[in-house]
Amino acid sequence: MDRMLMSLVVHVARFAGAVAAIWGVAYPLNGATQAPGPVAIRVTSVDQLGLTGVKLPPGVTLHGHELSLDVWDSTVAEQVLARGEVLLSGLSAGAAALLLALAVALRVAAAHPGAGPSAEARTNISGEADTP
Image 1: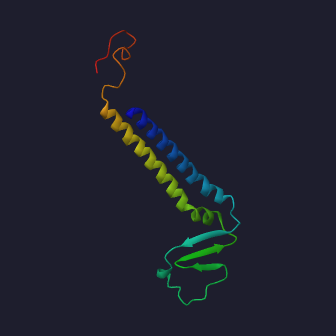
Image 2: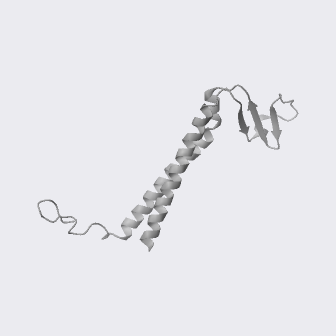
Image 3: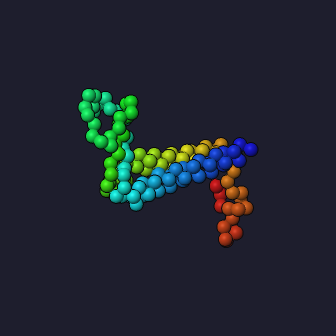
């Protein structure tokens, strides 16, 4: 039962990591196809920018401690960089899921050292049994 549960955890982690990695790459690529359109960029530390009391240009809105920049007629690079957070998050989640699956698989293999192929299965073509 434990081995089946660990196998399920490994498969779910691999699937979730693959979905996150694919989404992390697909979302910025989709943004690259919308190059002449608008791009929105959030800046979360407005205090460091020193924008208090300054008249902001049209299209720039200030919501509490978050600055939202809406820019029209963007380039491909601007669209991709605006979605770079999703790219890095998706690839990191995919790598973490693969490492987690590897760690669980190694733990299960260490807990059950005799769970490998039997002596009959290790027989080579010449009929001689391999010794572990």
